[in-house]
Amino acid sequence: MRSLRVLVACEFSGTVRNAFLARGHDAWSCDLLPSEDGSNRHIRGDARDLLHDGWDLLMVAHPPCTRLCNSGVRWLTKPPKDKTLDQMRAELDEGAALFSTFWNAPIERICIENPIMHSHAKERIVGYEKPAQIVQPWWFGEPQFKATGLYLKRLPPLVATDKLTPPASGTAEHKNWSKVHRASPGPNRGHERSRFFPGLADAMADQWGGHAVVVEMLARAA
Image 1 (cartoon, rainbow, N blue to C red):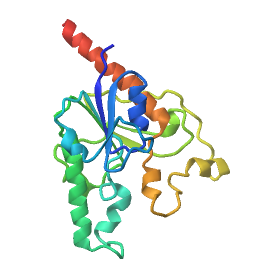
Image 2: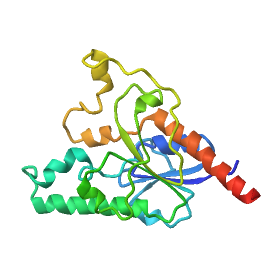
Image 3: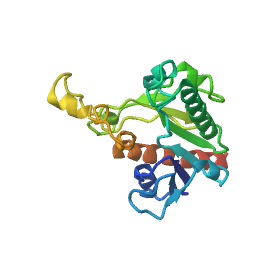
C-alpha cells in the first residue's frame, strides 16, 4: 500500500500523527508549541507555511476556535473584562482567516476538526460548508462526551468503530464522561480540552488512510 504524506496541523500531542505513522504513512505534526512526546516528526512553527509542500491529506486537529464556536458568540456583544469589543472582533476575523486558509489549502483531502460555528464566523469563512458530521468520542470506544464537528473535503464520514452506551444523566459516571466540559479554569485548560482522543484518531487513520489509497488505485486502473 502506498503511504500518504499527511500533515496534522495545530497538534502538539502527536495523537493523530502517531495513528497515521503506525499505519505506515509519512505523517508529520505541526504546532507553535513543541511536540509533547519529543518526536522528530514534529515541525514547530506556523502550519500555513507548509501547505504547498505536496501533502496528500491535511488534518487540522484543533485550530484556535474560541471566537468561532457557538459557546463564544456572547463575547462579541459583551466582551470579557480584559478585552474590548474591537479586540474580540479582530480575533474573530483572525480565527476565520485561519480556518479559511486551511479549508482552501491546495491539498486533495482535508479534515478540519472544529466545534459548531455561529453565524458571524460562517459568513467570514471563504467557501464555507457545514460540517459533514458531528461525532462523539464514545462512538470510538472513548468514555467521554465531546461533540466534534468534522469539516471534510473529498473524505467520507467516519463510521463508528466501538460505540459505548452513555451513562444516565445525573450519575457520577455521567459526570466523569463530561470531564472535558467540566475542566477547571487555569492556564492549561484550553490545551487539555483540545486533546484528541486516540480512538477517534485510530478511526481516522484506518478509514481515511485506506480510503485515499483505494481511490488512487481505482483512478490509476480506470
